[in-house]
Length: 105
Image (tube, rainbow, N blue to C red; front, side, top):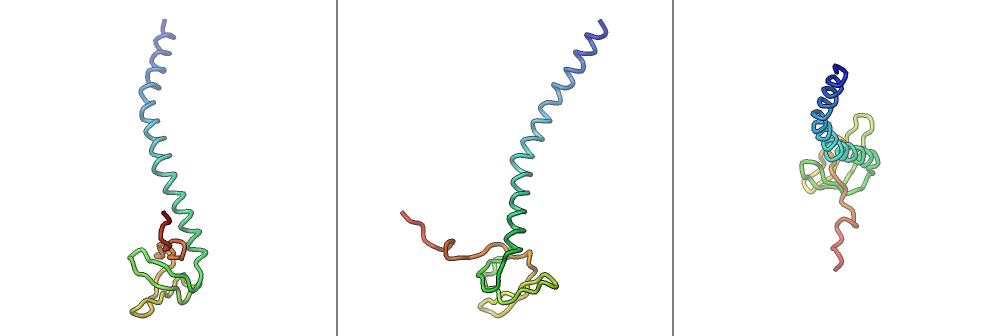
């Protein structure tokens, strides 16, 4: 008789934890995992930036890469106002011809 009560109690506690486990899985697959993939893509993009590419910084400054300094991990961007030195991590995206082309109808 005690074995039956104990087994029912164990099964009941697992069933009460099931919604919490489901919530954790949903958070992982819909929030954490996509963010990790974005970070990997961003690191790969920042590693392959080349001199002469037109880029946008995270602060919204548009310009062309004039110089890449690997020693202190900085990039000098040439804008309309002059040259500005940024951290390599502050480059948000590259403006290439394929991104600026108008959409075909």
